[in-house]
Length: 352
Image (tube, rainbow, N blue to C red; front, side, top):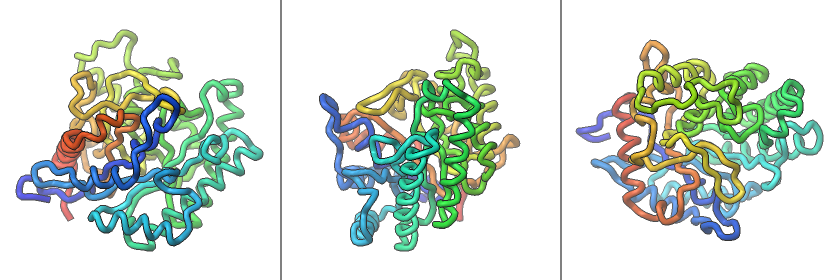
């Protein structure tokens, strides 16, 4: 909070996982160490405002999902010494990271739930150590729309049951789960499928939605689910009214379920890197091809359909997943991102 920027909520977080996701594969960018990501976050400043914290991927080389208590304390110290809080954490539920498909009623489900349990354990311990005042544990279905399409009804039920069991684990740890809607995850690959899945789980206080502005823009285009497209074919992106109406349709449907929120930009294309499947492309906040008016469209998630602040999120996070390392190592990148985040809070924040 400064004289020019009077709101101090929601807190502004950067994401550490862009240093890992889509990195480390043959021919690709190497992973960026967690300490480096945190140093870049802590150093960023715009108009007297700095990041308040960071969100975290519970996956090596950043954080070992099997970290012992000493390692978790070391992680807490890394945040504290930089004046940063820890917010939401991502549980590595995917088969390549030790998890399993939420659509597999056998060993896959067992592995999926074990990764959720481990993620909730770390999240709870960070809360107990006083460095994590709020946030969720992020999950997805860890399986593809192509596999799901073999039996949409049956597979949707299987994913819902896995999520329901995961919710019970989260409650035991005093945590909440948020499923990030992306076009690359089965049963979550369209806004209608996402709502259907959450309704089947039926536990909005425990298992909800994580909205990411880059991914949800792809929902309006019906990527991987053309039957659920909202915007017309060959849409003219200069037609801002139609875009706003499309985004209102999906935010009105998903906002009641939303527990966590990522500010992001998208140019209406898909992108994948390393082992990560193609999903909504994350662009720089000031990308000239970006289709979103970030402060304006963030308000569709942060305000209800009457325009009132929901105050549903104590922090919001920037997601620059799969940015090239050369972009992430440039300090101006984080200044520009922080400027966008400040713009969102100026427009839709509050003071406590």
